[in-house]
Image (cartoon, rainbow, N blue to C red):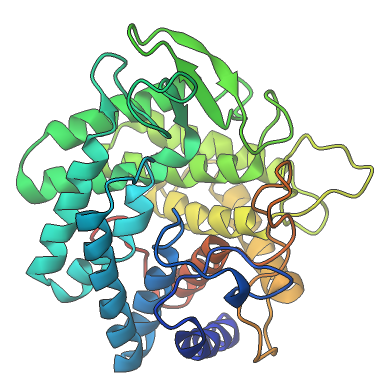
Length: 376
């Protein structure tokens, strides 16, 4: 059932290797990635090598492996020369590039690079506030006390580093941050804030806000999807049942607020007039996250059927209504993703992370292949 979509995606990745060259896709512009390629400087740069590694695992074609290895070299240069990585998305960058190479090939240099990336992420741990600062430098007046829900997907890098080195300081920071995220980013009705602010000196909670959602009290669907997948991963590493329960509750909220075609709007609370933008990337993330969550649930869990049916409806809709299957010249896999609607930045185009999670979900369904958030 999934094979046609996978083969179509593999063909597009093969074609894009030559189109992208040494550069990295980020978001689409008028239906093309190639108009906005960058030199490994965005938070999204890891998703392209992640797709290359997935393509190599699926096909064993050395073309994909060679292209992925070349990208890992670029990530080594980025970590060595770029001290301006002033954000927390180091897990997104290095889990899908160098850690993927370590998982697949057990390459020692890739492992060491990934451990250095974990150390870089730990420089964002704020001892006074007891959280990982999302954006900006230490002490920044606006950003210094902010966490964001996306960071749950960066925590696996720290859990992995503790497993790999035996140094539990990485995992301790990850657990504290995950617990703060559970307590303050997830609301009582199982919806979520995009971001939350703390006093930088005392760690006292100040309140939630949004950066990309419709308004501060709304539910940005991509953030909700990060929460589903991220808390499931925190459970995989810690076996704390609170994380599994939180992931499940957030997943049910997401699925119960989908429009008729089962692909997410960019924000759950956005008005219906005018017709709001979709975010196929949020639905791609939720499909990958649901696969993780369902695998971790007990076989007799009362919500398993609801989650499984929601997964199947969403991935089927992505394949049949949003994917570019059959369009050989397309550079992207999923249409109608949104980056920042409020900011007017790519509100309706390809999103490289949407393409990555869509492929990850398809490969997990077809062959049981997982992404690179942990070593299976």
